[in-house]
Image (cartoon, rainbow, N blue to C red):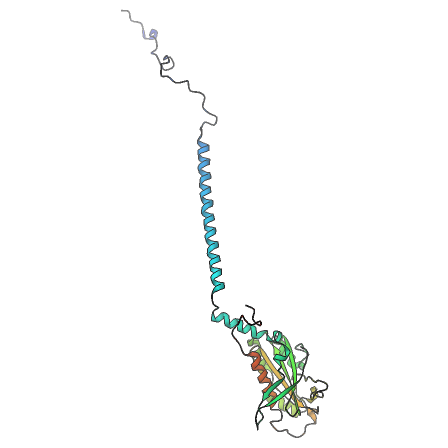
Length: 291
């Protein structure tokens, strides 16, 4: 047996030189482009499914929120109003009566008053003046007070007592709310000051007289004003002034008049103030309410 040196021994058979066997598969081809096979397609598909789930969850959340909001709104519309809501609605209705009510309802045809002796009597309306601005319906000094507190308008009407010897002009001064009306009312000079002014020859500052031709109040002008008073109801201040039907100026009255001659004046103003300011609860069956 001969030995060959290591350098001359044949190399052992390797995979590259192994002859193909009966179970050998086809030779492997080149790797696909990109070097990662189908992995990107799998990741993109997973991400698409995740975003779809997120969209479905968000849609369900929006639907639930909308359903809850609609349910709450429906329950709010169907529930009974609270006491605070009723009070606000009643206050708002009173505040707009000077615009919403007919003039004949604000100033009735007849208003009762109580003389010092005897049964109740009625003053008869002579006429209703057109709506005036706060500066036109009162004396300038009084207009400053009313304007400072937000006066909106002044409505006036003139009445005569049962004997038609005394005439009274009543003015409804409208304010935005009761607080401003009260502030203005407290600044108006008192009736005691008006009495002293009458003795000195005039009543100022006061509501302007509203004469009506062809009636007992035809001669009643500002010079004939002999007394005045003020009252308040809700967002309204009631001003009134009275004089004699013959139109005699206050300066011509030398003798002190009896205390009951002009007694109907503050009573009539108070009756109108009370009717205008009384509150009523909302009634949707009534056309005066906007439900």
